[in-house]
Image: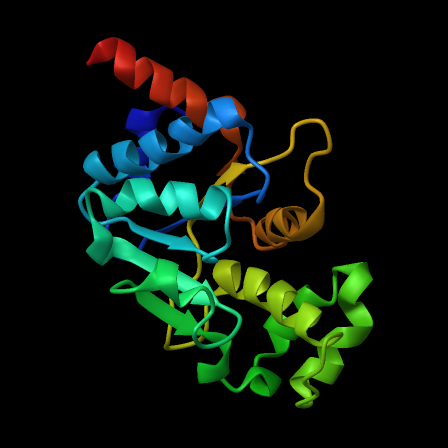
Length: 203
């Protein structure tokens, strides 16, 4: 898929693109994430950009979008006031706003993460401690993909910044896996950086 093909297929009011990835970003890539965020926002009119408000690639992508279309940013956060310094004036949806017990698909898909599987039910049943909070982040990563009935739309596409030496692991890997299970296409920096480079060449 080319950038032009992506825009033709996904730039409409009910489309949501994930912008996220690893917290650790190579120094030489940081500016590229910001530039891609601003470029994809500039070239689209309707696309909503969703992130988890994490440090690293999430923040860098969103900083780029913020320069162009802050009104099209949507942050899904694990609890109210999560990194609120970075979400000020942006639309945020906290997991605390939904009754997670009723979201069977979200819980099922969250349990696909083996490391936190046993903590998901604890969190859903109201347990809040230093262990169960780990589940909140995985559920948040699931929600970003699935959405919540009548509240936030499911994702349509995903842009990821991954660790190419250890790909599709951790929370980023979980989000990618949920995309696979829900048949939502996604790409990593091997492709979207090419889009960015070609855009600069054609500018």
